[in-house]
Length: 169
Length: 174
Image 1 (cartoon, rainbow over the protein chains, first blue to last red):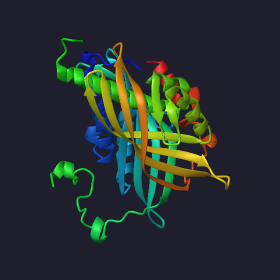
Image 2: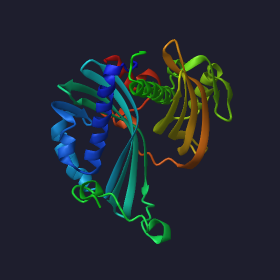
Image 3: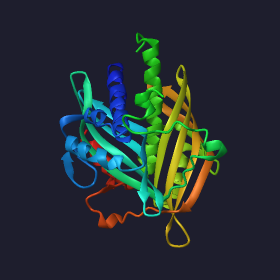
Image 4: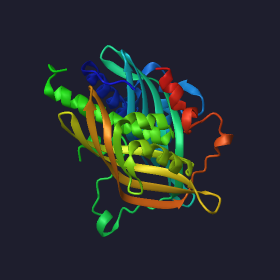
C-alpha cells in the first residue's frame, strides 16, 4: 500500500465518495446514482461471471426493490493510487430483509469489493468490480418497529423517491 | 513537507493512521503474519486483555488464535484520530465476525463489537502503530446459519486465508 502524497488527497476522497455512492444507489434503488459510479465499459463480477456493469445495474435495481429493505454498510477501504488508476478493497456488511414463506426473513452477507477505478478528467469511476463473499447469516426477522421504545423511531428508510434523502422529511 | 498547509498535513497524518488500522484488519483476516508485523514499530506493544506483551509476541499468539477459527472479518467503522506532532491516538470502532468450529461439528457465528484504542508514532517520516489496546463492548454467539456450499460454487469468489485470497492477485496487478 502506498502512502498518500498531498496531490493524491483529492483523488482518495473522490474514490471514497464513488464507493459510498454505489451503496446509496443500491440501498435507495436509485438507478441514476448507480449508473454514475461506472465507466460505460465497466465490468462487474458478483459470482456469476463478468457482465457489463451498466446492464447489471439495470437488472439489480428491480431485484433490490422486490426486497423489503437493504443496507450496504461499508467499512475498511484500502486504496492504492497510481496516477489515473486505483486499486481498492472495501469491506461491506450487506443487510437484506425479504418476504419469506413464514414472514420477513433476514439475510446478512459479509464480503469485500475488489475494485479497479480510473480517473478521466476530474472524474473517478469504477472500471472493474469483483465481489468476494466472506460469511453470511440467515434467519427470521427479529425486527420490532412498535412498542414504547422502537415505536418512537418513526423515520424509516425507504427507496427512491420516498426516502428522507429525497423528501427532506 | 514543512510548507504544507497544516490542515492538509493533518489530513495526511489521519489518513496514514486510518490506513494502518485497515491494513491490520486485512492482515488479521488473511492470517498474514507479515502484513500484521508491518503495521507495528519494532518496539510496539499490544494489549488484547488475554494477551499483553510486545507486538512481536502478539503476532504468533494471534495467528494461533485465528488457526482455531474457520474465518473472520473485522469490519472497521468510526475512526477518530487525534494527532499531536509525531504522535497520534486513535479510537476505532469494530464489528468482528468469526466462524468458529463448535462441539456439535458445525460452526458458531460469534460477532463482537468493540473499540481499538491505538497509539501511533511517526518515525523517519513513516507512521506506524506503537500500541494497540482492544476493548470489547458487546458480543453475540449463535450457531452459524451460513448456507453456502463453497466447494459447489466454483464461480463465486470466497474469502480465504493466506495468499489464496483474491485480494493478493488484485493488489499485485496494481
